[in-house]
Length: 446
Image (spheres, rainbow, N blue to C red):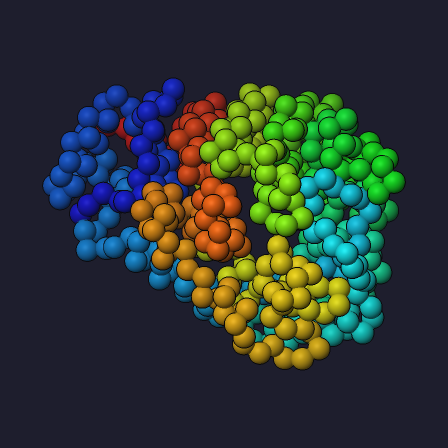
Protein backbone atom coordinates (compact mmCIF):
# COMPACT_ATOMS: atom_id res chain seq x y z
CA UNK A 1 0.00 0.00 0.00
CA UNK A 2 0.98 3.64 -0.42
CA UNK A 3 -0.42 7.08 0.28
CA UNK A 4 -2.45 8.74 -2.44
CA UNK A 5 -0.68 11.51 -4.34
CA UNK A 6 -3.87 13.54 -4.01
CA UNK A 7 -4.23 13.70 -0.23
CA UNK A 8 -4.55 17.18 1.25
CA UNK A 9 -3.75 17.75 4.94
CA UNK A 10 -5.09 20.85 6.66
CA UNK A 11 -4.27 21.98 10.18
CA UNK A 12 -7.44 23.99 10.72
CA UNK A 13 -9.14 25.81 13.56
CA UNK A 14 -11.40 22.77 14.11
CA UNK A 15 -8.57 20.25 14.06
CA UNK A 16 -6.56 18.17 11.61
CA UNK A 17 -8.46 17.62 8.36
CA UNK A 18 -7.65 14.99 5.77
CA UNK A 19 -9.13 15.19 2.28
CA UNK A 20 -8.68 13.11 -0.86
CA UNK A 21 -9.15 14.88 -4.20
CA UNK A 22 -10.32 11.76 -6.03
CA UNK A 23 -12.74 10.23 -3.52
CA UNK A 24 -13.64 13.67 -2.08
CA UNK A 25 -13.78 12.30 1.44
CA UNK A 26 -13.13 14.69 4.32
CA UNK A 27 -12.04 13.39 7.72
CA UNK A 28 -11.45 15.10 11.05
CA UNK A 29 -8.72 13.30 12.98
CA UNK A 30 -8.94 13.72 16.74
CA UNK A 31 -5.95 13.98 19.07
CA UNK A 32 -5.86 10.23 19.69
CA UNK A 33 -6.03 9.34 16.01
CA UNK A 34 -3.57 11.85 14.60
CA UNK A 35 -0.39 10.14 15.94
CA UNK A 36 -1.61 6.82 14.54
CA UNK A 37 -2.17 8.43 11.17
CA UNK A 38 1.28 10.04 11.16
CA UNK A 39 2.89 6.71 11.98
CA UNK A 40 0.85 4.82 9.42
CA UNK A 41 1.68 7.10 6.49
CA UNK A 42 5.36 6.71 7.24
CA UNK A 43 5.00 3.03 6.39
CA UNK A 44 1.63 2.26 4.73
CA UNK A 45 2.75 -1.31 4.03
CA UNK A 46 2.19 -2.25 7.66
CA UNK A 47 -1.45 -3.18 7.34
CA UNK A 48 -3.33 -4.33 10.38
CA UNK A 49 -6.87 -4.52 11.63
CA UNK A 50 -6.87 -0.99 13.01
CA UNK A 51 -10.15 0.76 12.05
CA UNK A 52 -8.09 3.76 10.99
CA UNK A 53 -6.41 1.72 8.26
CA UNK A 54 -9.75 0.58 6.86
CA UNK A 55 -11.12 4.11 7.03
CA UNK A 56 -8.16 5.48 5.09
CA UNK A 57 -8.65 2.82 2.44
CA UNK A 58 -12.33 3.72 2.17
CA UNK A 59 -11.50 7.40 1.84
CA UNK A 60 -8.95 6.80 -0.92
CA UNK A 61 -6.11 8.10 1.23
CA UNK A 62 -4.33 4.74 1.01
CA UNK A 63 -4.18 2.88 -2.30
CA UNK A 64 -2.61 -0.18 -3.86
CA UNK A 65 1.09 0.47 -4.43
CA UNK A 66 0.80 -0.85 -8.00
CA UNK A 67 -1.64 1.88 -9.05
CA UNK A 68 -0.52 5.02 -10.87
CA UNK A 69 -3.25 7.47 -9.96
CA UNK A 70 -2.17 9.95 -12.61
CA UNK A 71 -2.40 7.41 -15.43
CA UNK A 72 -5.71 6.18 -14.04
CA UNK A 73 -7.10 9.73 -14.01
CA UNK A 74 -5.87 10.35 -17.54
CA UNK A 75 -7.44 7.15 -18.85
CA UNK A 76 -10.73 7.76 -17.03
CA UNK A 77 -10.92 11.30 -18.39
CA UNK A 78 -10.55 10.00 -21.95
CA UNK A 79 -13.14 7.32 -21.32
CA UNK A 80 -15.67 9.84 -19.99
CA UNK A 81 -15.05 12.20 -22.92
CA UNK A 82 -15.24 9.69 -25.75
CA UNK A 83 -17.21 6.65 -24.62
CA UNK A 84 -20.84 6.47 -25.82
CA UNK A 85 -22.68 8.83 -23.50
CA UNK A 86 -26.19 8.54 -22.15
CA UNK A 87 -26.53 12.34 -22.10
CA UNK A 88 -26.27 14.67 -25.09
CA UNK A 89 -25.76 18.32 -24.12
CA UNK A 90 -26.53 21.11 -26.58
CA UNK A 91 -26.35 24.87 -26.07
CA UNK A 92 -28.52 26.95 -28.40
CA UNK A 93 -28.15 30.70 -28.93
CA UNK A 94 -31.40 31.72 -30.70
CA UNK A 95 -30.16 35.30 -30.98
CA UNK A 96 -26.95 37.27 -30.64
CA UNK A 97 -28.89 40.45 -29.83
CA UNK A 98 -28.90 41.70 -26.24
CA UNK A 99 -30.89 44.33 -24.37
CA UNK A 100 -27.95 45.30 -22.12
CA UNK A 101 -24.55 46.88 -22.65
CA UNK A 102 -22.34 45.34 -19.99
CA UNK A 103 -18.93 46.90 -19.47
CA UNK A 104 -17.04 43.60 -19.57
CA UNK A 105 -19.00 41.56 -22.12
CA UNK A 106 -16.81 39.28 -24.22
CA UNK A 107 -19.58 38.97 -26.84
CA UNK A 108 -19.07 42.46 -28.27
CA UNK A 109 -19.94 42.25 -31.98
CA UNK A 110 -20.46 44.39 -35.04
CA UNK A 111 -23.11 42.09 -36.52
CA UNK A 112 -26.14 40.53 -34.84
CA UNK A 113 -28.51 37.77 -35.92
CA UNK A 114 -31.77 36.08 -34.95
CA UNK A 115 -32.47 32.42 -35.64
CA UNK A 116 -35.09 32.17 -38.38
CA UNK A 117 -37.63 29.36 -38.71
CA UNK A 118 -35.61 27.39 -41.28
CA UNK A 119 -32.53 27.46 -39.07
CA UNK A 120 -34.64 26.49 -36.06
CA UNK A 121 -35.99 23.45 -37.90
CA UNK A 122 -32.50 22.51 -39.08
CA UNK A 123 -31.17 22.87 -35.54
CA UNK A 124 -33.90 20.56 -34.26
CA UNK A 125 -33.10 17.96 -36.92
CA UNK A 126 -29.38 18.26 -36.18
CA UNK A 127 -30.00 17.58 -32.49
CA UNK A 128 -32.35 14.68 -33.22
CA UNK A 129 -29.62 13.05 -35.31
CA UNK A 130 -27.27 13.34 -32.34
CA UNK A 131 -29.86 11.68 -30.09
CA UNK A 132 -30.35 8.59 -32.23
CA UNK A 133 -27.70 6.38 -30.65
CA UNK A 134 -27.20 5.52 -26.98
CA UNK A 135 -28.81 8.70 -25.64
CA UNK A 136 -31.10 8.42 -22.64
CA UNK A 137 -31.24 12.14 -21.82
CA UNK A 138 -31.15 15.40 -23.76
CA UNK A 139 -29.88 18.50 -21.93
CA UNK A 140 -30.51 21.88 -23.59
CA UNK A 141 -29.06 25.22 -22.45
CA UNK A 142 -30.50 28.42 -23.95
CA UNK A 143 -27.83 31.08 -24.32
CA UNK A 144 -27.20 34.32 -26.18
CA UNK A 145 -27.12 37.28 -26.54
CA UNK A 146 -30.25 37.45 -24.47
CA UNK A 147 -32.27 34.33 -25.31
CA UNK A 148 -35.55 35.76 -23.99
CA UNK A 149 -35.50 38.20 -26.91
CA UNK A 150 -36.20 35.12 -29.04
CA UNK A 151 -38.74 33.31 -26.88
CA UNK A 152 -40.82 32.37 -29.94
CA UNK A 153 -37.84 30.45 -31.31
CA UNK A 154 -37.35 28.74 -27.94
CA UNK A 155 -40.99 27.63 -28.08
CA UNK A 156 -40.83 26.23 -31.63
CA UNK A 157 -37.53 24.39 -31.26
CA UNK A 158 -38.57 23.01 -27.88
CA UNK A 159 -41.88 21.67 -29.19
CA UNK A 160 -40.10 19.76 -31.96
CA UNK A 161 -37.41 18.34 -29.66
CA UNK A 162 -39.71 17.40 -26.78
CA UNK A 163 -42.11 15.56 -29.07
CA UNK A 164 -39.19 13.58 -30.45
CA UNK A 165 -37.85 12.82 -26.96
CA UNK A 166 -41.29 11.64 -25.80
CA UNK A 167 -41.57 9.37 -28.84
CA UNK A 168 -38.09 7.90 -28.27
CA UNK A 169 -38.43 7.77 -24.46
CA UNK A 170 -35.53 10.17 -23.98
CA UNK A 171 -35.52 12.36 -20.86
CA UNK A 172 -35.59 16.07 -21.70
CA UNK A 173 -34.36 18.91 -19.51
CA UNK A 174 -33.42 22.51 -20.21
CA UNK A 175 -32.11 25.62 -18.49
CA UNK A 176 -31.46 29.18 -19.58
CA UNK A 177 -28.72 31.79 -19.12
CA UNK A 178 -30.44 35.18 -19.00
CA UNK A 179 -29.74 38.66 -17.68
CA UNK A 180 -33.13 38.44 -15.95
CA UNK A 181 -34.62 41.73 -17.16
CA UNK A 182 -37.35 40.03 -19.22
CA UNK A 183 -37.88 37.11 -16.85
CA UNK A 184 -41.28 38.04 -15.45
CA UNK A 185 -43.48 35.49 -13.73
CA UNK A 186 -45.57 35.18 -16.89
CA UNK A 187 -42.45 34.37 -18.91
CA UNK A 188 -41.26 31.91 -16.25
CA UNK A 189 -44.56 30.03 -16.53
CA UNK A 190 -43.97 29.78 -20.28
CA UNK A 191 -40.42 28.55 -19.79
CA UNK A 192 -41.57 25.88 -17.38
CA UNK A 193 -44.03 24.69 -20.02
CA UNK A 194 -41.06 24.43 -22.40
CA UNK A 195 -39.25 22.08 -20.03
CA UNK A 196 -36.91 24.73 -18.63
CA UNK A 197 -36.30 24.04 -14.95
CA UNK A 198 -33.53 26.48 -14.02
CA UNK A 199 -31.95 29.80 -14.88
CA UNK A 200 -28.68 31.64 -14.34
CA UNK A 201 -28.97 35.37 -13.67
CA UNK A 202 -26.15 37.83 -13.04
CA UNK A 203 -26.08 40.38 -10.21
CA UNK A 204 -22.87 42.35 -9.77
CA UNK A 205 -23.44 44.00 -6.41
CA UNK A 206 -25.83 46.58 -5.01
CA UNK A 207 -28.04 48.81 -7.17
CA UNK A 208 -25.45 51.51 -7.85
CA UNK A 209 -22.66 49.09 -8.74
CA UNK A 210 -24.77 46.69 -10.78
CA UNK A 211 -26.45 49.43 -12.80
CA UNK A 212 -23.06 50.97 -13.64
CA UNK A 213 -21.76 47.63 -14.93
CA UNK A 214 -24.89 46.13 -16.50
CA UNK A 215 -27.10 48.97 -17.82
CA UNK A 216 -29.70 48.83 -20.54
CA UNK A 217 -28.59 50.14 -23.92
CA UNK A 218 -30.38 53.41 -23.15
CA UNK A 219 -28.30 53.76 -19.99
CA UNK A 220 -31.11 53.00 -17.55
CA UNK A 221 -30.54 50.62 -14.67
CA UNK A 222 -31.56 46.98 -14.49
CA UNK A 223 -31.04 46.08 -10.83
CA UNK A 224 -34.54 46.74 -9.50
CA UNK A 225 -36.26 44.86 -12.31
CA UNK A 226 -33.96 41.86 -11.98
CA UNK A 227 -34.51 41.64 -8.22
CA UNK A 228 -38.27 41.97 -8.72
CA UNK A 229 -38.21 39.15 -11.26
CA UNK A 230 -36.10 36.84 -9.09
CA UNK A 231 -38.58 37.28 -6.25
CA UNK A 232 -41.44 36.49 -8.65
CA UNK A 233 -39.97 33.38 -10.31
CA UNK A 234 -37.81 31.58 -7.73
CA UNK A 235 -40.67 29.23 -6.84
CA UNK A 236 -41.08 28.26 -10.51
CA UNK A 237 -37.46 27.95 -11.63
CA UNK A 238 -34.27 27.03 -9.81
CA UNK A 239 -32.40 30.34 -9.72
CA UNK A 240 -28.60 30.52 -9.73
CA UNK A 241 -27.23 34.01 -9.21
CA UNK A 242 -23.80 34.62 -10.72
CA UNK A 243 -21.72 37.48 -9.33
CA UNK A 244 -18.96 38.62 -11.70
CA UNK A 245 -16.07 40.09 -9.74
CA UNK A 246 -13.18 42.42 -10.48
CA UNK A 247 -11.40 45.08 -8.44
CA UNK A 248 -14.07 47.68 -9.16
CA UNK A 249 -16.99 45.86 -7.52
CA UNK A 250 -15.54 43.49 -4.92
CA UNK A 251 -16.72 45.60 -1.97
CA UNK A 252 -20.24 45.81 -3.39
CA UNK A 253 -20.29 42.04 -3.85
CA UNK A 254 -20.35 41.60 -0.08
CA UNK A 255 -23.68 43.43 -0.04
CA UNK A 256 -25.25 40.81 -2.30
CA UNK A 257 -25.84 38.64 0.77
CA UNK A 258 -27.72 41.41 2.56
CA UNK A 259 -29.79 42.12 -0.55
CA UNK A 260 -30.75 38.46 -0.94
CA UNK A 261 -31.82 38.35 2.72
CA UNK A 262 -33.80 41.58 2.52
CA UNK A 263 -35.90 40.19 -0.32
CA UNK A 264 -36.69 36.91 1.44
CA UNK A 265 -34.51 34.84 -0.89
CA UNK A 266 -32.04 33.42 1.61
CA UNK A 267 -31.44 29.72 0.82
CA UNK A 268 -34.21 29.90 -1.78
CA UNK A 269 -31.77 30.77 -4.57
CA UNK A 270 -28.19 29.66 -5.15
CA UNK A 271 -25.33 31.97 -5.97
CA UNK A 272 -21.69 31.74 -6.92
CA UNK A 273 -18.81 34.10 -7.62
CA UNK A 274 -16.87 34.27 -10.89
CA UNK A 275 -13.82 36.29 -11.88
CA UNK A 276 -14.00 38.66 -14.82
CA UNK A 277 -11.12 37.92 -17.18
CA UNK A 278 -9.52 40.00 -19.93
CA UNK A 279 -8.68 37.18 -22.30
CA UNK A 280 -10.68 38.42 -25.29
CA UNK A 281 -10.00 41.31 -27.64
CA UNK A 282 -13.33 42.87 -26.61
CA UNK A 283 -12.38 43.19 -22.95
CA UNK A 284 -8.56 43.31 -22.93
CA UNK A 285 -8.81 46.91 -21.69
CA UNK A 286 -10.15 45.52 -18.40
CA UNK A 287 -6.85 43.81 -17.54
CA UNK A 288 -5.85 46.32 -14.81
CA UNK A 289 -9.14 45.61 -13.01
CA UNK A 290 -8.96 41.82 -13.17
CA UNK A 291 -7.88 39.69 -10.24
CA UNK A 292 -5.06 37.21 -10.54
CA UNK A 293 -6.24 33.64 -9.86
CA UNK A 294 -4.63 33.79 -6.42
CA UNK A 295 -6.25 37.14 -5.58
CA UNK A 296 -9.66 35.89 -6.65
CA UNK A 297 -9.26 32.70 -4.60
CA UNK A 298 -8.61 34.78 -1.48
CA UNK A 299 -11.64 37.01 -2.09
CA UNK A 300 -13.85 34.01 -2.84
CA UNK A 301 -13.07 32.48 0.55
CA UNK A 302 -13.84 35.77 2.31
CA UNK A 303 -17.22 35.96 0.59
CA UNK A 304 -18.07 32.33 1.30
CA UNK A 305 -16.97 32.73 4.91
CA UNK A 306 -19.31 35.69 5.35
CA UNK A 307 -22.13 33.79 3.67
CA UNK A 308 -21.66 30.84 6.02
CA UNK A 309 -21.62 33.11 9.06
CA UNK A 310 -24.93 34.62 7.93
CA UNK A 311 -26.51 31.20 7.68
CA UNK A 312 -26.37 30.67 3.93
CA UNK A 313 -26.00 27.09 2.76
CA UNK A 314 -23.06 27.21 0.39
CA UNK A 315 -22.42 24.43 -2.11
CA UNK A 316 -18.71 24.90 -2.80
CA UNK A 317 -17.49 21.51 -1.68
CA UNK A 318 -14.82 20.32 -4.14
CA UNK A 319 -15.78 17.32 -6.25
CA UNK A 320 -13.88 15.06 -8.62
CA UNK A 321 -14.19 16.31 -12.21
CA UNK A 322 -13.14 13.81 -14.91
CA UNK A 323 -13.01 16.54 -17.57
CA UNK A 324 -13.08 20.29 -17.21
CA UNK A 325 -15.60 21.35 -19.83
CA UNK A 326 -18.07 20.03 -22.36
CA UNK A 327 -16.11 21.74 -25.14
CA UNK A 328 -13.65 18.81 -25.16
CA UNK A 329 -16.39 16.21 -24.83
CA UNK A 330 -17.48 14.26 -27.90
CA UNK A 331 -21.22 14.87 -27.44
CA UNK A 332 -21.41 18.57 -26.53
CA UNK A 333 -22.11 21.27 -29.12
CA UNK A 334 -23.16 24.92 -29.38
CA UNK A 335 -25.52 26.12 -32.12
CA UNK A 336 -25.54 29.79 -33.10
CA UNK A 337 -28.44 31.86 -34.49
CA UNK A 338 -27.45 31.34 -38.14
CA UNK A 339 -26.82 27.63 -37.72
CA UNK A 340 -23.07 27.48 -37.20
CA UNK A 341 -21.88 24.83 -34.76
CA UNK A 342 -19.13 25.45 -32.22
CA UNK A 343 -17.55 23.53 -29.36
CA UNK A 344 -16.99 26.39 -26.91
CA UNK A 345 -19.19 29.22 -25.61
CA UNK A 346 -16.25 31.64 -25.79
CA UNK A 347 -16.00 31.18 -29.56
CA UNK A 348 -19.66 31.90 -30.33
CA UNK A 349 -19.85 34.20 -33.36
CA UNK A 350 -16.26 33.55 -34.47
CA UNK A 351 -16.73 32.07 -37.94
CA UNK A 352 -13.19 30.74 -38.08
CA UNK A 353 -13.85 28.68 -34.93
CA UNK A 354 -17.04 26.99 -36.19
CA UNK A 355 -16.74 23.24 -36.79
CA UNK A 356 -19.69 23.13 -39.20
CA UNK A 357 -23.37 24.04 -39.44
CA UNK A 358 -26.75 22.44 -38.84
CA UNK A 359 -27.68 22.30 -42.53
CA UNK A 360 -25.27 19.49 -43.35
CA UNK A 361 -23.62 16.57 -41.56
CA UNK A 362 -20.59 17.56 -39.52
CA UNK A 363 -17.24 16.70 -41.05
CA UNK A 364 -14.18 16.28 -38.89
CA UNK A 365 -11.80 19.20 -39.40
CA UNK A 366 -8.82 20.93 -37.83
CA UNK A 367 -10.95 23.14 -35.56
CA UNK A 368 -12.87 20.18 -34.18
CA UNK A 369 -9.58 18.30 -33.81
CA UNK A 370 -8.19 21.14 -31.69
CA UNK A 371 -10.88 20.60 -29.06
CA UNK A 372 -11.04 16.82 -29.18
CA UNK A 373 -7.26 16.48 -28.90
CA UNK A 374 -6.96 18.87 -25.96
CA UNK A 375 -5.25 17.08 -23.09
CA UNK A 376 -4.61 18.89 -19.80
CA UNK A 377 -2.80 15.83 -18.50
CA UNK A 378 0.08 16.65 -20.88
CA UNK A 379 0.68 20.05 -19.26
CA UNK A 380 3.65 20.17 -16.88
CA UNK A 381 1.75 22.49 -14.53
CA UNK A 382 -1.10 19.97 -14.26
CA UNK A 383 0.95 16.76 -14.06
CA UNK A 384 2.47 17.84 -10.75
CA UNK A 385 -0.61 19.51 -9.26
CA UNK A 386 -2.24 17.94 -6.21
CA UNK A 387 -5.71 19.31 -7.03
CA UNK A 388 -5.75 18.05 -10.64
CA UNK A 389 -8.70 15.67 -9.96
CA UNK A 390 -10.85 18.67 -8.99
CA UNK A 391 -10.41 20.66 -12.21
CA UNK A 392 -8.88 18.37 -14.86
CA UNK A 393 -6.84 21.35 -15.96
CA UNK A 394 -9.54 24.01 -15.95
CA UNK A 395 -10.85 25.98 -18.94
CA UNK A 396 -9.35 24.63 -22.21
CA UNK A 397 -10.09 27.88 -24.04
CA UNK A 398 -8.15 29.93 -21.50
CA UNK A 399 -5.27 27.46 -21.64
CA UNK A 400 -5.14 27.60 -25.44
CA UNK A 401 -4.91 31.38 -25.35
CA UNK A 402 -2.29 31.26 -22.61
CA UNK A 403 -0.13 28.75 -24.50
CA UNK A 404 -0.34 30.91 -27.63
CA UNK A 405 0.77 33.92 -25.59
CA UNK A 406 2.31 32.99 -22.20
CA UNK A 407 2.88 36.67 -21.36
CA UNK A 408 -0.83 37.46 -21.71
CA UNK A 409 -1.80 36.48 -18.18
CA UNK A 410 -1.05 34.13 -15.32
CA UNK A 411 -1.58 30.40 -15.64
CA UNK A 412 -5.40 30.01 -15.84
CA UNK A 413 -5.87 27.82 -12.79
CA UNK A 414 -9.15 27.51 -10.92
CA UNK A 415 -9.37 28.89 -7.41
CA UNK A 416 -9.18 25.39 -5.87
CA UNK A 417 -5.43 25.47 -6.44
CA UNK A 418 -5.07 28.36 -4.02
CA UNK A 419 -7.94 28.16 -1.54
CA UNK A 420 -8.70 24.45 -1.10
CA UNK A 421 -7.51 24.29 2.55
CA UNK A 422 -9.74 27.22 3.49
CA UNK A 423 -12.73 25.74 1.64
CA UNK A 424 -12.28 22.44 3.47
CA UNK A 425 -12.09 24.21 6.81
CA UNK A 426 -15.26 26.11 5.94
CA UNK A 427 -17.04 22.87 5.04
CA UNK A 428 -15.87 21.16 8.22
CA UNK A 429 -17.18 24.00 10.38
CA UNK A 430 -20.52 23.89 8.60
CA UNK A 431 -20.88 20.12 8.98
CA UNK A 432 -19.87 20.15 12.64
CA UNK A 433 -22.34 22.92 13.40
CA UNK A 434 -25.23 21.23 11.60
CA UNK A 435 -24.57 17.52 12.19
CA UNK A 436 -21.81 17.15 14.74
CA UNK A 437 -19.63 15.21 12.29
CA UNK A 438 -17.69 15.90 9.14
CA UNK A 439 -19.30 14.33 6.09
CA UNK A 440 -19.28 12.57 3.63
CA UNK A 441 -16.08 10.90 4.90
CA UNK A 442 -17.18 10.30 8.47
CA UNK A 443 -15.12 11.40 11.44
CA UNK A 444 -12.15 9.14 12.04
CA UNK A 445 -11.66 8.27 15.69
CA UNK A 446 -9.22 6.10 17.56
